[in-house]
Length: 237
Image (cartoon, rainbow, N blue to C red; front, side):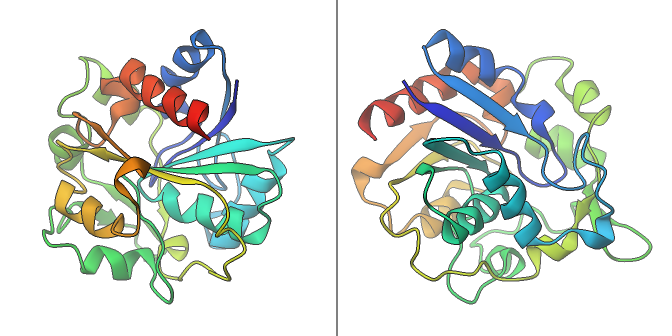
């Protein structure tokens, strides 16, 4: 059985994986969800947050071989961690996530998307150092296929996203090239449409990809189905 470290995307925290952890445990795995710096219970000031800091938080949580699962913007965080030290990284799973490319920040990759559903989706903080999703975007694009009560639960926890982590490229040295990688396509995603996911996963072979018929937040809309795919990945890794 495998151990998973679940890494959230923009504005979220460990709280978004609440339904996935027990599903993985029921399949015989262990799983931990963490708060990246300035998210959830982590009180790091937004001004001090960096992509390297994200990687440091992930690496500090590893105690033996672990499969890292990165959702959305979390693809940058797990890649940076694996590039810094792949020793305990047993696999990288990109869940409708950004796959870093040389010299490109997440903002750069967002700008290359075939569609731009996130245009106008954010409110920027007055100091321009962080942002958060507008409520109407959350209900339409992030949680549109999720159970009743998801929006209210998320709004009680969702925070500001440090922009600094998304305007710098990941440091790609090839250190993690030997780490197995998988991509999970969320085929009904209205935040990162399938065409953009396919574009970012162009380097993955057919047997390294999986389809999940959900929107952007399968940890809420289909935690069991997501856990089943992660179980298949673990058994093949």
